[in-house]
Structures are given as structure tokens and as C-alpha cells.
Amino acid sequence: MIRLFALLTLLSCSHYQLQEAQSEKEIPYRSLASEWKADIHYEGFSADDIKKVQGAVKIIKKIISSDEFRELVINYTFLDKKQFHENSGYSNEEIYQLILLGSETTGNRLANNTMDVELELYEDSSKTIGYTYPHTTRIWMNRKYFHNYTKAQVAGNLMHEWLHKLGFTHAVKWNKDREHSVPYAIGYLIEDLAVKLEL
Image 1: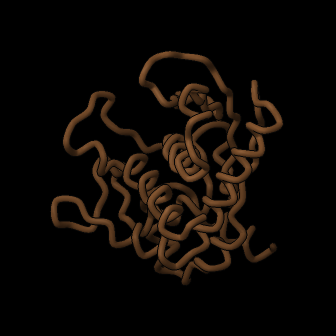
Image 2: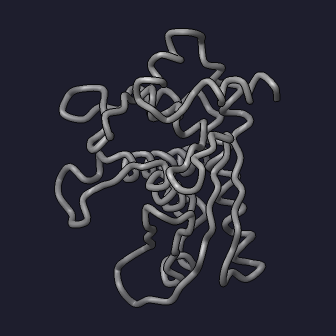
């Protein structure tokens, strides 16, 4: 735990500091990935709803701790380059590191190896699956979709929204490149791996 704290102190979410830290010492990916966790607070969720989210979180945790997830993120390509669309200037390797560090842009931006979020269910007949805002830890999930989604789909959607908490964005309106943005691409990776691994 002391080693993890020292590493998290060394690393901030600055692009340049991540590069510097990477060159100073090898980052213990396996340790960080295996210790990754989620701290979730619920608003408007029934006991069964919470159980469904907890199942989705187990899926995310299992996938994040896998070598396959690391390889897929690091080797992701867009426009024939190893990169994501709208990547905020981060390399694929740095995006993977930020996921492990769990350093949300809200609050004090503490890198604590944890997904720290509040979830709220709401009712809406629109096509919006869920949404969030940059200034809050809260993620709103549309009950219409949540209740019909599998745990794998909830996992992919939760990961998508949480990646906004790490500072990544995408176009509001659909365009051909949007699915390659960090939230969409990695959200899809989580869902696809969950189906492939039968989680």
C-alpha cells in the first residue's frame, strides 16, 4: 500500500509528468490493475438496481485487471496511428495509466486507484442513455435503458460516463469519428470483452 501511495504521489494527471514518471521508473501495471476498485453512491436505486450495478462493476474490474484490456487500449488505432480520437493530448499508454490511477477531474483530483462516482436513476423517454457534467461526480442513468440493459451493457455505459470524469470528451452530435473518442471506444471495449469472456 505504501508503494502504491508513493507511486500515486509521483504521478499526477499532467501529460508531461506522466511521461517523466514513466521514464523514471517502470509503473507496476499488474499491481495497479488488480487493486483497481469502485466507490459508488446511489440515488433512486432499488436493491435490485444496486445489485445490477455491482455486477457491472465486477465486470469492469475483471476486465481492467486483464492483460487483454491493456493490450487493446495501448494498441488502439485511429487514422492508422496508435491513438484515440479527442484524446486530450494523451498517448494510449497514458490513457491506460489514467484509468488505473482513477484520478477524476472533479473534487481534489486524488489519484486513488478508484472509480469515485455518484449514480442517479431518472425517467426519460428520450434516446439519451445517460449523461454527466464536468463539475460533478454524479452520473445520471436513464431508467428506460438501465432496466433493459444487460450487466455488460451497463458496464460499458458506466465506463463511458466515468471516462468523462477523467477529463475525456466527445462530439455531442453523431459523426463518423465519435466512436473512436476515449469514452466511446473504451466503453465499447468493456462491453465487447464482457460478452467475449461471458462475464
